[in-house]
Image 1 (cartoon, rainbow, N blue to C red):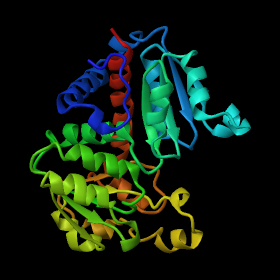
Image 2: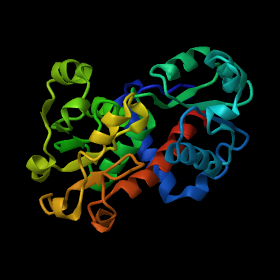
Image 3: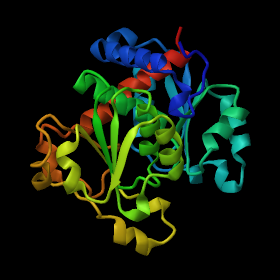
Length: 306
């Protein structure tokens, strides 16, 4: 299906290809033993120039559950990048040691650059505030599994919408599904980028609105996608401190939510969802994180497998 291909942004995959990945992920989840040696002999390289827990570990777990092995680094200081090696050289070298590269880098466009210097497939695990396509796949799979379909939904995105690459990727992907309405909830300093509003959303005639109040729209949402305010994207710590607790989801706020609403979060959370919300049956973010492993298993299998 995706044999030998790279994945840099969500729209690299057609809706049909995404659906095939969802079907495969569910097959793998139902019968993981049937896939335990499907990628035996293959090597995954994880190159993480920024910290990660879920993405890096779920990719490594995915590869190992498929019978493959892993190499790489979890921070750039442990690689020759700290000595001044350029990205192109790093990619050329690692491509000679492995069969597929998963890379996270703080610079927008780094994954695309890497793919141009690589002889093997490259998967973007996050490039600055730009894209995070495999998180989008995990988000969509979670919605599909728990709602039964991805259409006719009102989805609220709350928090850091300016720098949130998970938001940017998911918004783009959702424009392909019918009946989707979006509500963007953020302080004025962290609104969704203009290229998404005036470009993709307007051009595709997607219904959306902006607000700075979560309380006013909570009852309208089928899905609330919470995000943290990302300290690492701020140049001014005072601005971060001022904005970091703009929205905190509590059990009291959940009283206004629909009975069948879903709360998603790409994680990690800092303070934007209180621990008490975890016991609410509408809190789906830990299930969402687990789905991330299965969709990454499906992706690796599709790119490398027979």
